[in-house]
Amino acid sequence: MQNQIAQLREEIEREIAAVTNQQQLEEFRIKFLSRKGLIASLFDNLRNVPGVDKPIVGKQLNELRQRAQSVLDEKILQLKSKPKSAEHLDLTLPGRRKFRGTKHPLMQTLDEIKSIFVGMGFGIADGPEIEDDWHNFSALNFAPDHPARDMQDTFFVKGDILLRTHTSPVQIRIMENNKPPIRTIMPGRVYRNEAVSSRSLCNFYQVEGLAVDKGITFSELKGTLLSFARQFYGKDIKYRFRPSFFPFTEPSAEMDITCFICKGKGCRMCKQSGWLEILGCGMVDPNVFTSVGYDPEQYTGYAFGMGIERTAALLYGVDDIRLFYENDVRFLRQF
Ligand code: PHE
Image 1: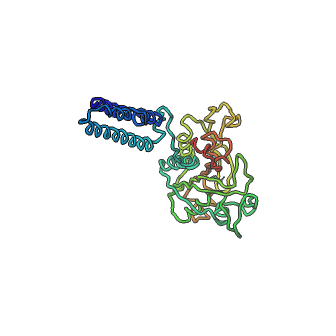
Image 2: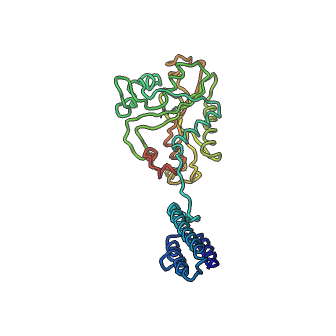
Image 3: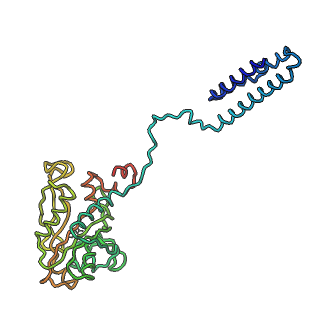
């Protein structure tokens, strides 16, 4: 009898250790602790034990039942606290990716432009977005009846106060406050009273550049902008300067580069022309120097300007610049 008790005790310990779910737990309870279970049947056999041994065997049986009950209770608690998912842990499932924010593509483009010009010795400056007519137009040699002053292009705030239509007024502010030599780029937001479309916005970014010193020539303008274009768009691009007009530069030009998508063969991006227009530029008009108190006989300089949205659109092949302002993460995640 005592042997049976010892064996059963071993069996209980072994089997409870193997229990991992509710069903096995119930089977364990029925096998050992139910009314027809193994422990109960040993209690039945107690009848056949000789009188002298009864107390000690009875005590051992009671201990066995207590032990079985306590390991069962322990297991119940264990199974409860065990997180369900641990049973179904599938290590082959792909991880859950946390999306990190990134810099907006327009700011990435601007950063790249800035770092190229800083690498060529340019400083960075900014100016107010609310301007007066003098800095935005008059000092930049816009004739009083120039169409760009028309209500259609300019958002007026009050009287001659307006939202700047380009970053060129920052040129004026820098020259008013500094003596040459000057070599600075001026990024910032500009505003135009224009219909919004896939190619134009009423609020966008430009980067302006200005270099003024004694003896600056058009070839320095070309060399600087070509170096920029090669670093930014790729070193095998070809370029051309087309004559253009801006009131504040003379001569004025627009710079085109060969389309970096089709390498000049003609594609949707360059509208089959093989060329992409990337910026406006020119030699600072002597009238501009006069308005800021520089002597145009002593100093020459060049200026250039480009739109960031257009530049980013070209670089990333985006065909609608409004996408940059919709803040749709499906779009933004691609950069
Ligand atoms: N300010 C001009 C524009 O907005 C761009 C430009 C800047 C052209 C400097 C020449 C020199 O279109």
